[in-house]
Length: 131
Image (tube, rainbow, N blue to C red; front, top):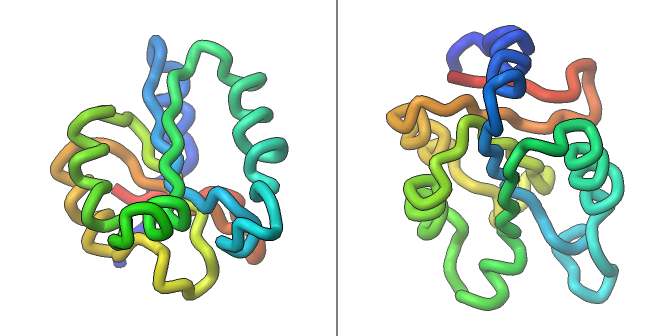
């Protein structure tokens, strides 16, 4: 795995005039609709919107996609990246869940010249970026 760049790369993107961000995350707590919306709605998305009000961001839910389309999120992410042309992709993974995007998706996005971040809530850094 390539060495993660510094957070200054993310800061550079966020200073860009109206950067585009794509969040790839779960919709429901533990990917279970019976448990309600994930905490990302008030902890991450609301904070992000208040901190970067000019930033356009899209959210795709890997658990909802799997439930509705009966397909893995890997089948849709390349198309979504082409459509939204994000400067930054932030993945919020579900442990070792089969719903998580594969690493090959990170490799494909490299051709799109955007940064890829993985939220890491336990273990030091909050956001790990890869080129």
